[in-house]
Image 1 (cartoon, one colour):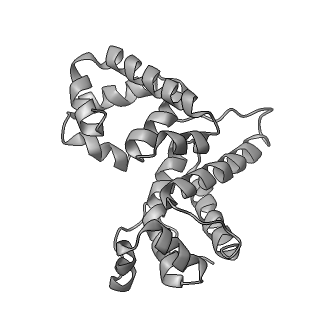
Image 2: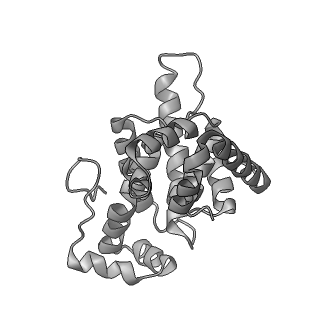
Length: 213
């Protein structure tokens, strides 16, 4: 079931008053209402998490159409199988994990039509998330930050993004990326060390902005 009113992205943050009431629910209660067939709960999930999934999908290398269509496909699948889904404690983590798998499958299938193989990439680009740091550093410093992050490995970039932009825990990052928790700790530790070396003077502003300390 398509709950979007239009196909434009990014999404509007405006919710009707009856949908905003769902914001007071904890994740477990909201998920239970959705599973019971509550359309308002379903619409709230869509409008709340679609912007996050869209941004994540673009970072993963999906085109606008691939990202948008995968979001629609994911939410239609959730609605159609709502009674069979397991209990969810943290909705953001669950959706990111499910969406990553679905989008990468789509990208892989489409790119295989034109190339022999496809390796998932993860690029840091100017986006809504960069508003987190715009108040702390100049546009020139922000450009240096993005350039430095793109010098990290693909997995390091994705792990940093999920940790500091999406606020996922180490276990949730491991589940989303299908790697061990120890591997996540290692990726982030090495990425932070590399960023310190690359950024020098603006590192302190960065860690304040992203809450690394």
